[in-house]
Length: 362
Image 1: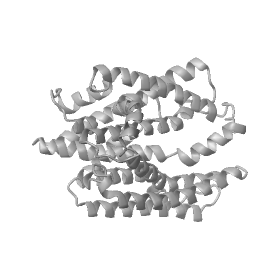
Image 2 (image 1 turned 30 degrees about the vertical axis):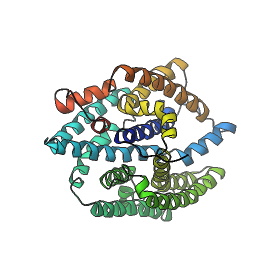
Image 3 (image 1 turned 90 degrees about the horizontal axis):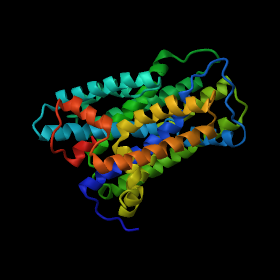
Image 4 (image 1 turned 60 degrees about the vertical axis):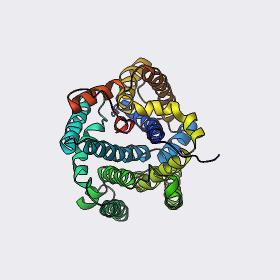
């Protein structure tokens, strides 16, 4: 396949496609959590194919796709604020209003399912605002510092692990997933600000080097997760396994992102994956919608007391197909998803008649 120049609008399609892919990965992790487990809940079946799927999801999916979603949040932040600035809008106040609207959605979402991430994104989004006018070098420095502290905290917790004991509070703070999320926020901002997304072919060497480094790190850490999955389960094994999954989240997410951006330079690949882009274009509606369908409709109707990996995969595929078909049909008649429409209304206080493709993707 020959790489061809991609127009600005098509690059937004690329972001939509990656967002749509990330939604499926997120759902694979969320489906088992639609059930609240208690001491009376039957044990999850990890034998046979269920065990294989559990290991594969742990290695290739867990924490990786939320990391991708966090990256896209950072990209969207830059697109939204830079477009508002060019219009002469009060872009900081406009973005604060956007975050407050997201916070409201997140609180409502908590009534549907306890595992909402929107409230966390909305609150952490306020810390992203001061970085908008920072130089790329400064943003990259912060990425390095926070990512380094996150990884070192996880490694320190592993080195000092004692059964039944909590890791030092500083390790617990910097080893938290929230730090990982903010690192990916900043990485998305950096990538958008330096045109790494808008000019993929121009930065071919950067992409190729990043792919190589993150692939090596991902293979090493994935091997550790695989090994831990094969030994007898215990509290220590579970702790080390989860720590290795956390260590591999950013490298593998970045490897996925660089690979996808390079693949989506090809118009043929974009055309083939365009239906998934419809899911991503309505990501806000589909994220909440998948939890509404899964936690409040499918699980109760099926009468499931526990969700093992294979049923979780089947449920995720069914929900995704529903959202895929619904998104394609909806976008034939409307420019935005239903919740995206409300979000824009809350952000602007009115509907603007003309919105650029870039702004629509923010």
